[in-house]
Length: 138
Image 1: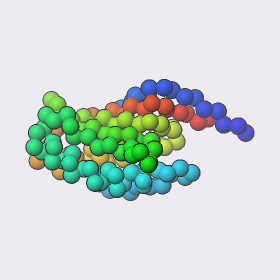
Image 2: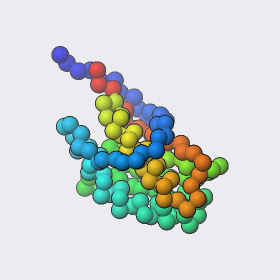
Image 3: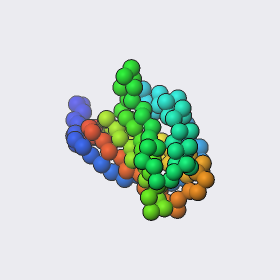
């Protein structure tokens, strides 16, 4: 049986926020997976916290995941506080529907980490994901 793929260009969606108590960076079945993001993300999270704790209105609390030698699906994540809400904006080069649960867990984990480590955490979280090439495999 041949698989067919529906592709949506420039797709955006929301991930409902849930506090994540533990998160394991995992390997996807046949591709790199979010395990490859772990060192890149973890080395930049102190900067995000320092930036937001110093100035909660900063627009510079951003992690860049993509590297010239590592073409990842996740490109960046920006963390902003406005009207007492932590806005997390994740930008992906590419995403397949079968990886949505693991990706959502990662984004919720990042939001939880920031909320748990802010000196004055906002009252709520909004997570938006922007995907350049979103594909549904049937």
